[in-house]
Length: 439
Image (tube, rainbow, N blue to C red; front, side, top):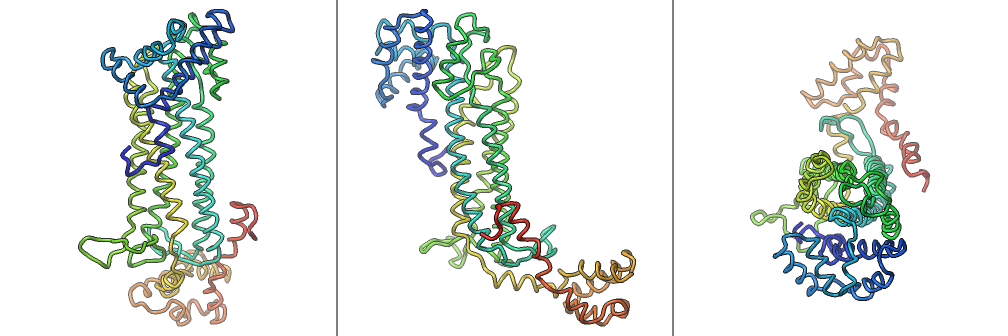
């Protein structure tokens, strides 16, 4: 991922220094386990730690790269550089193991590390959404279906819905993290013929992983497919909230707006512009994250016990998807925290259709008064269409309609235009989402 959309902590997970450090830990812990079994000398295990456990500096990484340029094999290059440091005892490193044992176990660690950061990101976003939701819980605004005015809701209720969605996403990511955190040290074609299962168990325990039940030389890619699919779902939720804000910032609506910082410029040509650039950017980044899902799904169908058709895509989608989503979640949190909300514009939009937003209440009141639903719908719609065409207030038209006033007098009709009717369930919904609607 390009630096523009990267944050240091997530990027560091995918840097060579971290990857080689994990490779070293896998190999060193494996040698420890082999020493406990008596397969290799205990002195060799100590030598690996004492001479090989140094930071993967730029110099070390450059040496590994130089060896790989000749061998065209990254794991062999790593092992060769390690042998140069450890000496003769290095012949006991990688005993009975395959490259996939190292690569797949390392990838599991990296994805687990990435998931931990993403979970932190989600916690920050959830906190911001809850704070703004409670702040605007009773702020009545227009609810829309098909982008057309439907019935009133509150802005806090909109945000509470997004909070519930991202809470579900957090639970999904926790499950995906557990599923991806598996270790494979099972040797060629995964039979443990050349390495004892206790070695895998030892390495898994040291790295905070779970042994893979059946690793056919590679960890089955259904785990990875679910992980990236989960990232894709989270990205879609990011886009849904970003799209909501973009629509509400339109000039004709302008109920909310991204914070516009002092000195910020909206257009190179038009000095008046205040564009929703952050949420537009989030919409684009969501597409990048979701683009990783299809390759991850296609990686599931590897040939027989293994092939490496998955390898190239994972070297791209692992860093790119996690780095992009990390950046997107942090940016979205900032947007929510600083989001400008305009109550007067919300009030103006509520009144824009002359009271049509109360049409269902009139419909229901007529049915309660004895009118069939079909006739009630016809009567109400007939008056509603006049409002669309003439901009005449809906209540006035109803008061002049003999079919309406035969069943509902002026006082009853006026009572049907109370906004409070539409918000009486908000506390109950907040209690479901946050537990305590009074907080």
